[in-house]
Structure formats: C-alpha cells, structure tokens
Image 1: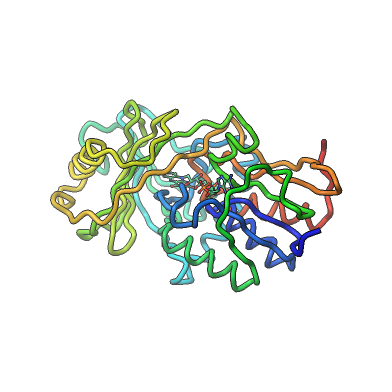
Image 2: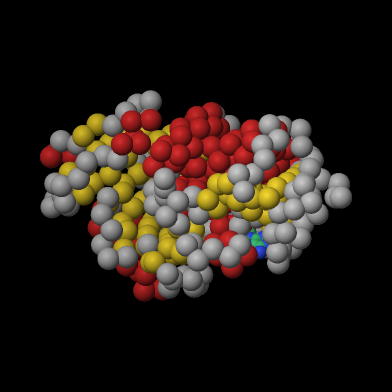
Length: 322
Ligand SMILES: Cc1cc2nc3c(=O)[nH]c(=O)nc-3n(C[C@H](O)[C@H](O)[C@H](O)COP(=O)(O)OP(=O)(O)OC[C@H]3O[C@@H](n4cnc5c(N)ncnc54)[C@H](O)[C@@H]3O)c2cc1C
C-alpha cells in the first residue's frame, strides 16, 4: 500500500479544496494532475459566488452556503484574491432573483426602473464574494503545501489503479473519458481580461443571447469581461471574433472600456452534468473512490461544501453505498 491516506486526481478548484480539506484534517495526501492549476478550467472563471448551471438544487444550496462562509472569511486575507463586490444583474425580459441569493447576509434589492439600462425591464442588486482565480489558485496551492501536501504532474489512465485507500476523482471534464461518464457535457466559456479603467461594480446581463453572455467583474487592477456558454464545444483556443464581440458588448455597458489594454484571453470548459456527482464507489481491496465532478458553472461556489462533505465521510470511515 502507498504512503498516502488519500490521493486526489485533479488540481482545479475542486481538487485543491478537497486535498486541503483532507490534509488539514490530518490525512497524508497527494494530488496527481495532468495540468497545473494555472492551466485548468478553474483559472478561466469570473468568478462570483453563485450556484449556476448545476444541480440538484437542494444539495447545491447547502454546498453554496458552506462556500459563502469560507469565501467571506477568506476575503479578509489579501493573498487569497477575494473581494466583496456589489453590482447589478439585469434582464430585458421579466425576471426575478434566484432563490439562493437569500443566503447572502446583505440580501437582494430589486432595482428601480431608473437603475436599469435602457431597454431593460428587471434587475436586482447584491454584494457577493468575487474571486480572482489566478491569485486564488496560487493561494490554495500554497495552503495545500503548507499542510504537507504534495502535487505531482501526471495523467491517470484508470481511477482503479492508484494504490491508496481513498482516491478522489476531481477531474472536471476529464471525467467524461476517465470514468467514463457520457452525462458530462462541456459548456465552453471565453473571457477577456483588460486593465481596469476604474470600474468597481459587477454587471451581469441575466439572459443568454444564443450562446453569448454579457457580464463583467472588477478585480482591482483588471476587469474580466464575458462571455460565452457554447454547449458541446471543446476547443480551448480563444476565438478572435468572440473576443471582439465581448469587448464590443461590455464597452456598450461601460464606454470607459473602449480601447482598454487587453491583459489576457482565457477559455474554460464548464463541466456540466444534470447533477453534480459527489458519491463514493467501492473499487475493491478495501479502497474507496470518491467522485467529485460535474459542478457546471458553479464549481468555485460549491467546492468547499463538496470538499467538507467528502472529508467528513472519509474521517467517519463511511462505506460506499454500492
Ligand atoms: C468562463 C467561466 C466562468 C465561470 N464562472 C464561474 C463563477 O462565476 N462562479 C463559479 O462558482 N463557477 C464559475 N465557473 C465554473 C467553474 O470554473 C468550474 O465549475 C470549476 O472550475 C470546475 O473545477 P474542477 O476542479 O472540477 O475542474 P478543472 O478546473 O477543469 O480541473 C480538472 C483537473 O483535473 C485534471 N485532470 C483531468 N483529467 C485527468 C487525468 N486523466 N489525470 C490526471 N488529471 C486529470 C486537470 O488537469 C485539472 O487539473 C466558470 C467557468 C467558466 C469556464
């Protein structure tokens, strides 16, 4: 048997938070990942707290509640790259705020018509944690290493092969082939990061226009502009015409963005599944395989809740249902 109690496959936000949670609970752990955190889907996220494009609603609500507590606490640590940001979600069609916004301590305020852009009929304001993913992933990796964790670059060909009592599958879209799991579908997101001309509030157009989103999140010196939700698209190369469309639409919201210096183009594949897969499987030899993937457009929000649920079950020595 190996020298670790638990081996985590994947180093996106799901893998890092799970590995931290297990390591900080006293388990000897290792991460094996095909890509470093800086080259995952997680680094492309916006990322605002909110369980979007994920299910089931009741479990996601509870995982989001845990995530909100952790991200709120971390907003006090400069190295974590998290800020509480206020802003608006607006819609051209009649719409109302999603239920889960009631978890926010500051609540939600419905916008008066005078607060809406021309042609918009509904909108609401709130303040939520916004996560600067490159900084946050660096912070998570440092925290994991400080807890004694080790990260190794390498591709896992079979989830039954790692020689550890507990294996946790946090492979995002990689799970489609590795498990295999045909229920997992990529929803491609492309964003553009520009120098911040002084924007302090987030803006989300609530509606999806075909596969186009219009949103922006300030991150101090830079602003992340989005975006897209292209179902079934796998390519990770930024498409120039999509970047131009994002810049045009976001500049229409904030004319100060016209001509802003471009810092980065990013693309990620949201690992969408009808339901997040968080469950244990018996893989023989007294070993347990935990699946933790399929978080869709809410993986940053859900990650700590999922990590804590797995850690509690591992510490309790819970046997898989099947
Ligand atoms: C544009 C965009 C905006 C988003 N905005 C938000 C937001 O505002 N809020 C929010 O909560 N969420 C948001 N999301 C969703 C969130 O980013 C994802 O749900 C989350 O990043 C998924 O994390 P993950 O760790 O499961 O997967 P990933 O980040 O993809 O990590 C998977 C890991 O598994 C590894 N791996 C895969 N296969 C193998 C293998 N065979 N062997 C070894 N390693 C393997 C990879 O190398 C990688 O390290 C957004 C996503 C996108 C694309």
